[in-house]
Length: 405
Ligand SMILES: *Cc1c(COP(=O)(O)O)cnc(C)c1O
Image 1 (tube, rainbow, N blue to C red):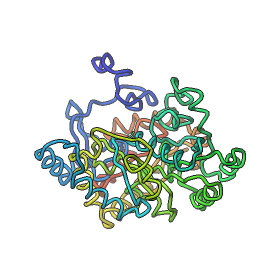
Image 2 (spheres, protein in one colour):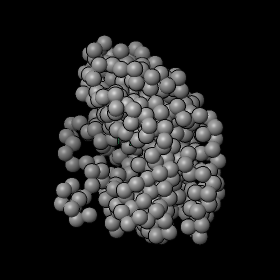
Image 3 (spheres, rainbow, N blue to C red):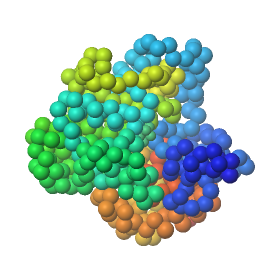
Image 4 (cartoon, rainbow, N blue to C red):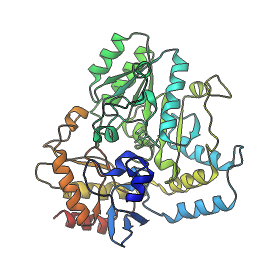
């Protein structure tokens, strides 16, 4: 790893990969198949990182690999709209009807940033409400109190963000409608949008309290602000129609990424047609991307979504529930929504980031390393979700629980 340390800041191309929260050196992984990954020395691990979210079908899924192969054989990006983009967009809209129109981009960061631009254009307002511990990528205006990666490094947001930009973002407490109402009331006519992870998954997993998302819908409507669901993690993971289907709340705009790229770099934002029609070239909001809607990425995403049938979701739910039931660790508690799960080193699952931060991160680091030694690779931070995939079948869960013992 010394070569990587010399080439990349902290030896990595994304901070949480550096294992700063748990200490030690990350394994050098060279191969993955299904629920299993192998390091350079040929050691195998059961993997709950799942590339931090995209791999709902596990590593090297046959259908996805074949789709990537044939799309690559057919040539690269042609700089015009292609059939792959159309097919993936149709699959997404069928599952998420609130997305009347969509724009593909290359990362969740880009998608969230662009959705905010649309919200500001639509409302003529500047302020954004986000939640403490909510992560929406690393665009300047969203790097305020931003959860896992940032929390792991214990830096309050980020250096290099202009104060004037940061001042346009105000922060509420997750699962606390009063805190949102107070912000909307103290900035009347100034809030363009409330952006939320409908299931918080970047402070560890925190489920929305009963009525929280519906309450956000009502409060934003009353204040003339838009409601943006960041479903980069939850989209097509917690239910076939994402969190908005699971909880029955229709946002104005939705941000997607991860799963819809089948493991390749992707993002998308979409929603009400009147809002999306503000985007260039049909409207005045400029947003572009040389490789957006790349045929290889679209093919991978389509192959992934096509395999995600209700039966597959039911299977994942059953195995994730078995894992939850078996995860009995002294002084710890489990939070789970579908295939998203966190073992919190505190007595009860937290309701917000302030409570999540009260977890015993030293105990987590110790647990992480004993599981690694036993051949189970967990996300290297208390504040990251474990990702169960369709490849985590009953035997895989059994081996995981044996490792726990
Ligand atoms: C990962 C993530 C993003 C950012 O996506 P990138 O592709 O890493 O830029 C945005 N929102 C949420 C909820 C995420 O988990």
